[in-house]
Length: 328
Image 1: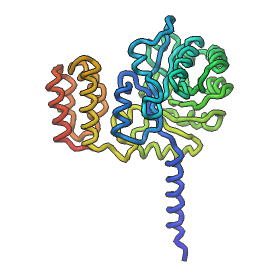
Image 2: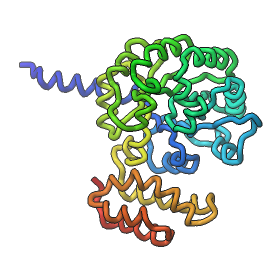
Image 3: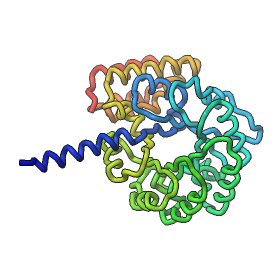
Image 4: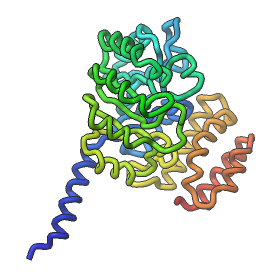
């Protein structure tokens, strides 16, 4: 007699495996966190990321890369993994200049950021500030898609103030051959608070003519797989804060020894890059702001780590966390 429960379970598991093989996982660009050093060492310690998106280039009237931007945009074939440069601008000629620079350095895609919620960015009409005027956004997109030497992907939010702005924005985006449209289903004024609007993401799935990538509040591989089950047509997931907090999320879970090696290597390289332990310490405090939640009973040590201004003490407290506290 056939065991239909077993057959259904097996069929569901086969579907899960197919979805896992199909889905692509991207590391979101996070200014001040996912620089070239971080990306290189993350790739060394924690496999599973298909593409690393770089924190944005923001072209100026001088049309020259700063020293930092030059360092952060190495030749594509020297990186050792797939990386995608991102551009933040409201001027089409500036975008096209940056796209040419990326092309000349061997990249095969450039990403347009129209989702950044930063107040200083939005006040200049960049990032999610571009969502304020869909007609102006349309003119900008027409100019860059007509002349970009690289395929263009786009990262966006639903709007500035309310989700109801999104259908008009998507209507504009649907006019262009976007390589992939990443949607963070919040509006700008939310920043990263409140819930994501899955009803409006569902609208995007049903109405976008371009391939979609989901971004927002994915804090575990289980959540990513749940999204795959809900939206089989969505080809990729972009994860930011979740991967900073759990760097090994996509490789079966974060191993504590690997995590300690990763953080120690970051410290050592940042000490050289930033000219000393103190500056390296302040950079890594940003990472620990996410990481400390991965450890059981870490509140007291995290408070000490956050407050210290002494690099030797910082290293000592970090080691104490790794050697005395279990991962959740």
